[in-house]
Length: 187
Image (tube, rainbow, N blue to C red; front, side, top):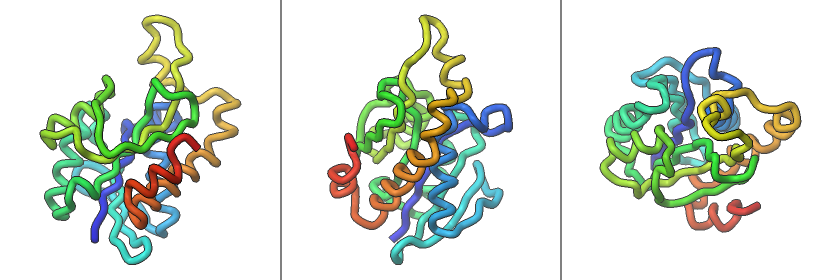
């Protein structure tokens, strides 16, 4: 069985430590857990590893957030991976900081990365893992907030949270989405 785990973010050093790039951070932790290294590939950086006998492809698209669907569609087709074995990791403004929410399907909720994926796959029925970044910004400042750097108190909690999100993705690979949602959602 093959799985594609995609951490959403924006390429470039200026985005590396921003809230919008939390998907990249979780993807890096997953690659570390399966002892895989990222290499340059079509549409981004790809790491290939195994987890409990299952082949795992971990992608950090270099298409910028609003074109993420191109990378996801390409790798699903190239590796012949069914959409139910796809996991998208993304930030979410509507959830409190650090909240983990895994779903089997859903709307794009205004997220440009998810919107692009939905357009390219022609479905909203694909697994996703949302990392709550909260919405602590004043009117009209959403872009600055999302593309802004973490606050000090958030930075202190990130390593533990990134580990939890990585574990949730690996659970998805081995135990399936239902068991993983039961084990991790709201925890």
